[in-house]
Image (tube, rainbow, N blue to C red):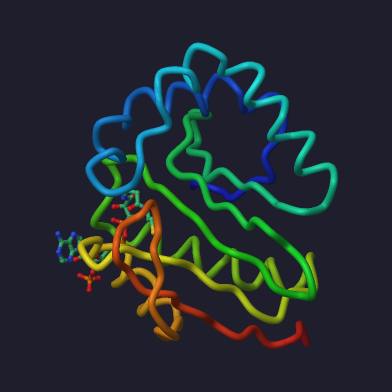
Length: 163
Ligand SMILES: CC(C)(COP(=O)(O)OP(=O)(O)OC[C@H]1O[C@@H](n2cnc3c(N)ncnc32)[C@H](O)[C@@H]1OP(=O)(O)O)[C@@H](O)C(=O)NCCC(=O)NCCS
């Protein structure tokens, strides 16, 4: 059964494979990472882990039983008990509720492990699938956004403290 794991150094090869295999799929909805990202992947990955160490972000990967990465779910700009959410799911598992279930799990984890009380996410108007994910995970639209330079909407969800 897939499980959500905090990003660590051992994930590097599987994350690279995930990004390469789904590059064209992701680029249809969100800005492409660019050739430089792939040719300097090791450096970029190390920088990401260093950033995570600072506590300003928390990166997660959804890992299948065979070790492959099925999705990435990231909390960035963590401050004042709030953070911004970003995610991407491997094309071959889309349409099965993977993103929704994992965003819900991440919301629980964000409250319990990071003390977050608010999560927000920006989605373009044309990214209907992502809007559905956020709506199903209890996020509400709050105002205009401009993700990747395209017109969109901010969504926000308040989190309850863990019981
Ligand atoms: C957006 C994304 C994360 C969705 O992942 P997923 O695992 O397929 O999501 P879920 O299965 O949980 O839910 C998807 C919902 O969108 C709907 N959907 C998918 N494609 C759609 C489309 N073209 N138009 C309308 N609805 C669409 C699905 O029917 C489902 O809604 P439903 O449960 O009401 O039927 C995935 O497609 C992805 O990684 N896209 C590229 C990166 C991206 O856009 N990231 C988000 C940036 S804000």
